[in-house]
Image (cartoon, rainbow, N blue to C red; front, side, top):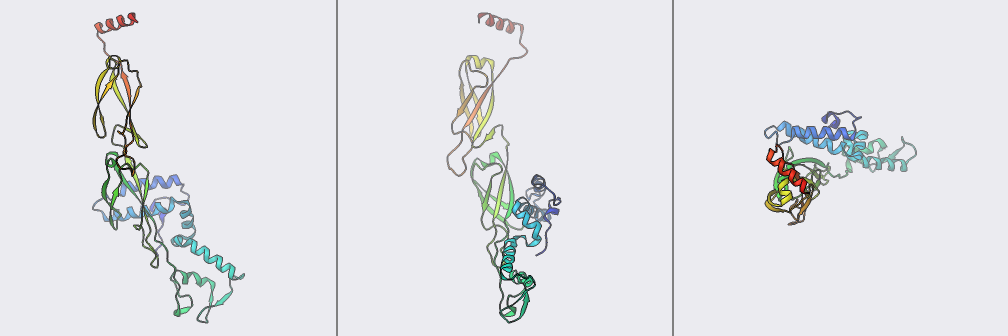
Length: 299
C-alpha cells in the first residue's frame, strides 16, 4: 500500500491541533466540493483524499495509530496483538522457531506472513487476516429550506456516486452513518462505512434552536396600543395574527407546529415563537406632537 501523507493533504504539520485540522478540512472541502467543480476530476479526487485525511486525523485514536504505524495504521491492533503473542512465546526477541515446513524463521517474518508479504509455514500454507475497509467522511452542504421535506440526492464521492435519502429536519453538524460505502476491505474483509456530516446554511429570517424557530416581528405603536390584525410569513406559508390591544414590547407568542420538522418523526414539527417589537413613530408633525401631549396630560 502506498503511503499517503494526510498532514500534507490538509496542508498541516504533525503539531496541528484538532482545531487546526477542523479549520483546514472545512476550507479545503468547500474549495474542492464536487458541486463547485462538476467537471474537474482532479478536484473530485482531491476532495476524496481530504475526506480520508480528516476521517483519520480528526479522530485522536486513529491519528495516534497513523502517527505510529504510517500506511499500516489500520492494522495497528493486529500488530500490537502479534507483538504480545511474540513476547509470550519467547523471552528472546532473536529466538527462532520451527514452522510447519520444518524451516527456521525469525519472528520478524511474522508480520509479513500476517499481512500478505509471505506464507506462514513456507509455500505449503499461507496465513492471511481479513480487515474491514477504511471508513470515509464526507460533508453535504444544504440550505435550511432544503430540509423541510424528505428528499433524495445523489452524492458524488469522487470515484463513485450514491443515491441517498435525506430525512427532513436534519441539524447542522449532524452525522449519519451509511454502511458499506467506505473503502474496500483487506483480504476479502467487509467494506468500511461512510459518515456523512450535514452543514446547514440558514437562508431564512428565522433563528433555529433544535426543532423550534424564533423570529422578531415589528408592529407599530398604534397597532400595539389599539390592537390590529397582521400577516406574517412562516416556512410553510402566510398566517394571520391578531395583535391584542395594549400589547407590550417584547411580547412573545407561540405558533404550535409551525417550526422545523422533527428528525425521523413524520408529520411532527417544532413550534414557532414570534416576538413583537414595537416601533416608535418618527418625524412627528406638530399636530401629532400636540395630540401626544394631550394624551400624556390625560394620563
